[in-house]
Length: 583
Image (tube, rainbow, N blue to C red; front, side, top):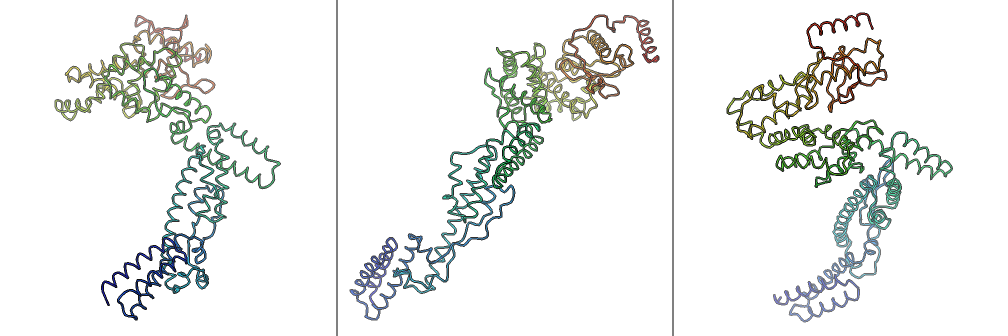
């Protein structure tokens, strides 16, 4: 046998097989076979070897035609294999389109043994042995099934995305196409296709109502359900079933929404478009981006009974990063300008104060409150606090190197001595937050002056700067007077306003009318609650009694302006006598 003839015949067979695979018709098979036979006949092979080569060529060309037909003629595969599905998904209440799509069987192409014995009319397939045909079919079906699984995964991912958006009330422009029969039937059996389409249509019908229902009050939602039921009472059984499925889906959304509200109220407000996603920190835009937060907080409490404070971690972080990223003086000037720009009313300022006071980050909150103050002294005190925020690490190292590891305890003791009586103890969250601001103020001054002296006087000066005053003792309790108000004026106003409020609430004969019977608790912005034994004193309607120190002081009310010791004793004896008589 000539090696050259052997190689030439082999190369020819490869070329002929490729040609047939690309055009697997019987006519082309016959044409290429004749070409191959011609090459074999002209070779130097023996007659016996030529017969063997022709037989081998026939088998190669038959396989090539079969492979070409399996790849290019889907009907051929259908004539030899079957698409087998498992049981359809049992659609239970609340099962969503993406759940059905994920759980449904995408089908598997399997060889149908009964079909292998029949004739296809294609020379190559009909001439192959059963074993060779099954081998080629197995290989083709494995590849096809893998491609089907990949395609199904892509469809499922798309369905998941569209379902997720529909759950939020958003219907994409390609929603109908994604959930069309033509798209789904490529990977699912008819029963599952119908189930997916049915549930997808329900999602689409519900979508416009989701955000509305999620934010309704209980009364509004009850009225909505009643309206739907009244309008569908005359529907046939199938349509009434759809209406109830519609309501159940909405009820599930509402329940999930209210759970989210209780867990993350700020995220709930943001996702439902009640507040802007971020603060607008551009010049002239801050106030207008904070005010909707106040309105949303107020509405959330009114409609759902959930108290929401502040603006949320993300927005607080925006302010914190701006504070750290700018010169302290520039931030204070910026924040003050935002609060005094044209169009920002006194009412707006009070709303913004409410939001700022409710912030979780009390350092950022305190800086903002100081920066927006009408008092130049308060605004000036914000600058060292900001400096303390920026340089805290360096200052702590320097303090520790000069005073040892006990500096933290020294800080805490000095601050606690100055303001600790205003709170429920050193573990009180408000105490810790206010103490932190005082500490940062001191550190900021240390950074500026290079003076690392730490004593009671330094802390007292910091308290005066941050709070604008020092603690005031009254009837066994301690409160912080408003910035700049003397203890003398504060005591007189507090006593007079309290006396007037109590007489108005309980009458001038009641034993509850004496201011000396109560302690006080600071509520901020010049407001002080009355307490008895640390518990709020309430009026007849059950509301805490609050004194606003800025209210107009009535005439002819009892005053603390008693100049002599004898006067004090006489006054207190008179009070004691009245209380003993039960007046």
